[in-house]
Image (cartoon, rainbow over all chains, first blue to last red; front, side):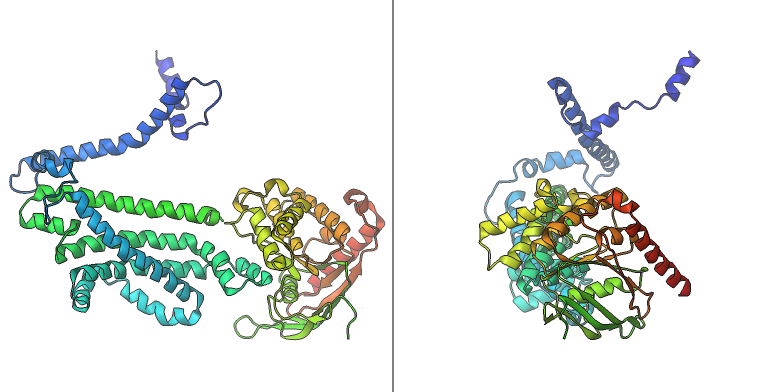
Length: 298
Length: 261
């Protein structure tokens, strides 16, 4: 018996779990059932750990919160109190009494406008700062200071300048998202390899051709790094500014429910905020991968 | 008044400020049409600077470079450069990299189908037609350099400038590319200036070898003609006396100069 145990201990670890991760190319002659089982194993291997972690955290939360009435509600209470909000995000009872989908959509529209503006202006400014030594010297220190100003600090100035909630919140998104785009674009433009510039000079590309055929593609990976940081920050900015400005939007919803002491609804809204923010980040990353193609793999 | 095709006349290069000093002093070199000239010297002697001056990428301090009766001042496609690290644009396929140059140089003189054919023709010349749709990150170092050569050839340059084109490649790949380059030179009779630090490569490929003295203030130390009939075969040429004599002279030059420095 001990010999058998020793043998097992010395034997190399079974390779079975590794093949599940590698996703082998479908081999001819391999039965369909085995292939299905293998891909199912792969899906399970990637989705089970986070799901189990989530379940564990919910359990801890449930146990910790159920002894302390009046504080943070446990997950079971969130389910009973906010079931309609969770199950039906599309209801619309008029006014601001809407499902979370509509609130999220409003916030997303604001982000779309503000962030779109920030992307255009940010890339243009970044190209200028990256391409011209003078522009870099005169603008970069200012940008470095402005980018550290938190989104909410812009809100009073923005309100004073625009007098209305909608343009003020758009400006807050813009001014939050624009700096990372500017700074990363500028780095990308400054880091264009000398060789590409030499190729452009030997070919005598015109400034416009240089911009379209060398500069933009070479800086694309950097630009998308900036856009990804920017979209995340603008989502931070919109939630915060909506809490103060009111109207419709996820940020307003959270503040409204806080005033109505409906803590369970706030938790549901937070989950929405997190998932939408995650979706935005993945979306920009995906577009970046599609646009930059091989450029990042130099 | 110079009668040579390409004439490098008393070229000096001095960097002002930070990097101290004189890189090149009074470099004189005449290259005839269809000639293959190698420039060889120790690293840091300024041979790449010389090539960049001929390309127009580095402005010279004094002197002149005259190509086919016209003074060279800016870069241009009549002096196509093959860079040491290929410098292909990684977001374009091999075909698109060559096509970019073809469109730029022949945009007015050739029709669209002609430019397409010409691009394919040049890729075929370097045996890269099969990989035309691959991007640089997907092909090997030798293949990238082949595409780089195709891009340069496609510009139909008056002089082809090669800056240590095979320096980053392994010995076998380098030999293949040298053979390809010899065949291309034999059929197209390009005028070529090649920078290299490989004595054997210089002897095999060149009509003349220009040996530079060590920097700072490098100049042409000695010009060694390689008197051997073409086509040259790598193996039989390596055994010939012409090869061994040339190699002896080159090695002697490089090593005595180094000792003196």
